[in-house]
Length: 217
Image (cartoon, rainbow, N blue to C red; front, side, top):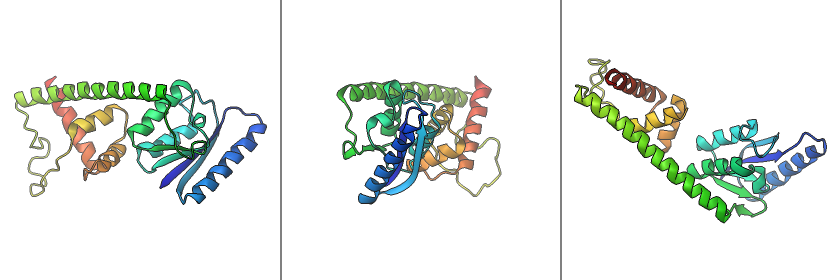
């Protein structure tokens, strides 16, 4: 199992340095005992109520890129507190990455209240995705009604005529782009979903979509 070790204390007091080192040592020992592959060890002194933590953003980068299977901490409060914790747990859950703690000696078990909130958040996000995809589909329908043919590359007819175009999930590309992902990140995400696609193809299809839809809005 590939893991990233995350250690956090909340203040800049010198006494906290020993706490960070203790967390690092204990978690490294646990990873070795369980034969985990440690991808990275991240330590920081930040408030758990903040999401915008440099170290946590690095952890979330590993999570969203699906380059780790679990995040290893001493206890769940190291991840965060309050709304920040819920948002981070939601991201872990969404990308199928486990939160493992020394305290639970394995995967962290959500409290009933946390599980309920995460379920609500997931439902809201799913309906937002459906609404967003419906908007994209409407734009495509309008384009087709006005003569656009999606099976053709309007800007490149005659180029690479012998090469068949890849089938790509344009709605997912647009959704991920609107969420702020780079074309490289989108390509990695789609490959994780089973699509053989490059950054260049993602970029090209997105620009084609925007050009066509914008021309008919």
